[in-house]
Image (cartoon, rainbow, N blue to C red; front, side, top):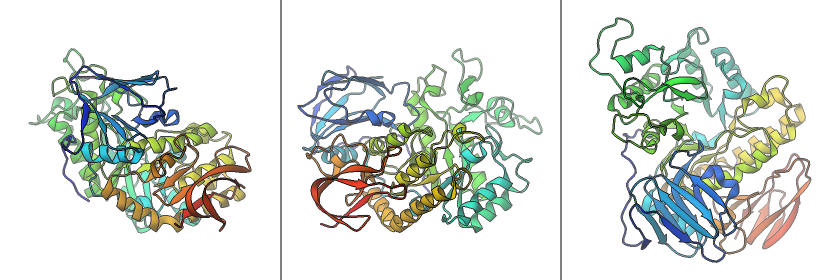
Length: 545
């Protein structure tokens, strides 16, 4: 899959959708209908959804998208949708939604029908049409493996190969392998660090021979003591000192006298200005070189958080918004078949894997996975990936840290029938044999459903609908809007994982129809049934009619 860099996604005008209100620049207040439930704005707040008359919350995405997917979009189970082209503040209180744009763009309210599905499909067709494509099929047909938790700031050739081989040795099929931060010589210095990677091309070749496709971690930061910084800022060839014709591409200080020094989680660095043509050219050249010289299949594009671009620094394009910068960074994901991104502003309908923000090794974080993925899907991101199994907080897995093996297994079970499944912490290091087997069983279950999951991905690539759906989306008006502990994968697979530590059973809401459970029993819906949840079981139900 090779695409050109695309412009900012345009709004497709359609007379079929009646705009109930659109006053430019002044903001708008929308009164909720009786019993109306809403989803949207930022999936970081998924656990607080649906928003309703009891909700009191302010979400300001003009300066902070909370390091996840966000858009000035809301959809309701009464068939209504709210949209604004610009980043906006949403204030929800007293049964009213107040939308205040950051600029002069109008706030649109459309009425598409009577259901959540009608609201979403209307919004998708009108504002972010589906691309018709999907990310690399291997994302769906096998688990993903990320080296971050195991190796953190010591990514190295020997241990990466050992990690990859250990997965296969323990019954996991090869899939997408992500080599995380510190494989590189420095931020912006996109060469394999030579003391930890003796022969990176040989490593990449061996990983490919094992059946993996390989992604490399990337970010838009440039350390100020690197050759890349001198190349971008001064236009100087690093080795010879020769003056170069092209230069620039970094954010400038507020006074415009020099490059901005931006604070981020790994220190202080310069930051690429994606409104600058040379920044885009240089960054793409670096990615293309890694594909050409080492066989990289794609990239994990990290960083690019909205707050880094919303501090008043000067940009090449005068008065560029932080959203423009984030969207400019996101465009690179369309250049390569295997990419992951998690800071998306208005990047809906695209064939890109969107991962949730880092979750902690806690039961509360496990319970957030489902509502956050539902929210991401209803924002227009079909291909949502939950955060890493067990949580992406590497401190929770350091030597001596206390691991909850039951929690780890339940994380794996949620992932098993999600659109994607992603490991980072090694089950073979942190679990005993009993819990390891439960993880193997979760992987085996995923592989059983992998062909169906891939077919669903292809369908959603065409329709724009989310792969993972809440109950209200599939079965409107039946009182399912507030269910957050079970989900639908497509329209015919209901998944009801155990999300409470030590619990031996749970209640499942069964919608209308005839359903066959994972233990072979037939359940006629609508019904509420209690199911046993021993550690080895992930309850699911397949709709037969």
